[in-house]
Image (cartoon, rainbow over all chains, first blue to last red; front, side, top):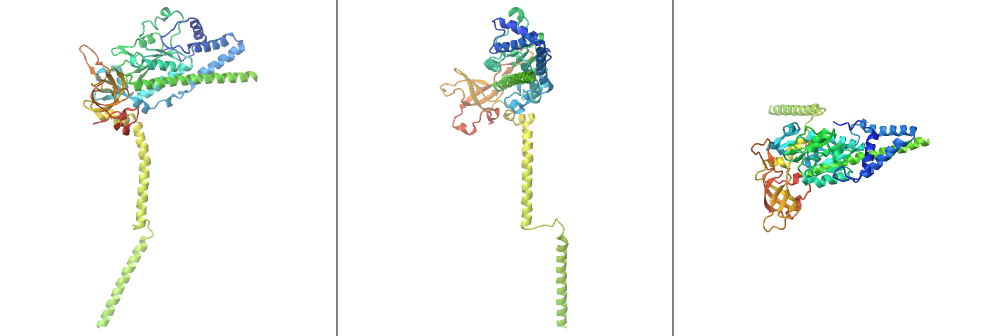
Length: 286
Length: 187
């Protein structure tokens, strides 16, 4: 599992961001609407941290440390448990799995049972896993991480892309080239910033084959959040969420939840920064 | 002699009646201080009605919490869901809603995991996106195990036959959006 939650040195990633900003290609297929805005913000922070006098540099890095450490003190800092209830999951048909013959042996612990040959996924377990996954994604978004939504289900491609656009993150719903993560420095140039978490809304390419993103993300130490149905392999997924990935109602629910979690986290970050700026300016005046 | 006898007998009767009256008053007097006197008339009716009202309130308060508690539980939600109450899908009639149309192919969602695809019948031009139809289900998911395969191959579709189109006027009584609970009608 990657070291996303440990404090990665801000200067290193920001320097990479500066490098990538100078080029004008797309790192991933998908919308880049807020990439410029994000780069600008990071640049501002880098500028302030690097080029300010020593006393101010100490103060500001202290404040940044405070912003980064405060959410980790509470288990549900963004109050994501109020976003979804078991009834919502039930009415979105999240508990419906495939037929008994399609079952993957590693999904058996997540199943409630089998009714008339159709697997039923245990929604109590799904609730716990979903809370963990949403919390993790929100924390990554809070720290300015890049989130990549991946799904090769053509039925939901547009939905996934619009979800990513609405929360200012990235999506990849087309053909996955082999070296996209593992060969990125050659395929896309040096100093490419890879995603900090990959959210897979469907872990299968087609019914026979698992999506390459799972294996490649595991190779590159990128944590994954994945919705695993009863015919999927949950092994390499860091935060599996057992649930239905075939019904439009369920997919819309997942997209809405991830979007709300990410937006909440980003709002919170903006609020914390504003508060810190206000408090630091007041201390400087006094 | 007869007069004496009559007097004596009258006296005896008086004594008996006096004793009877004394006994009655005695029994009633001894019972009045006790609380569980068998009441009659208005008092008894009042007691009965107030007790009934208390019991009704208790069951109402306790029943609502217990029923909402039951409904929140996944097991009871599953047990009460129309999909489970329906039983085996083969031959059941359900109501579906068309959510996508591709020329002659109608994609109908009836509240199961998958949708079904049916051919538009000859001359039926009224079937468009959003219209409700009656379906006879054959299978909730089309799967088969082929030779040499580890798992079933699934088509990610259900199979159903189109019966008739549900008239819009008939539908006004149960026109509630969204959940599977109002999609499946058991025949």
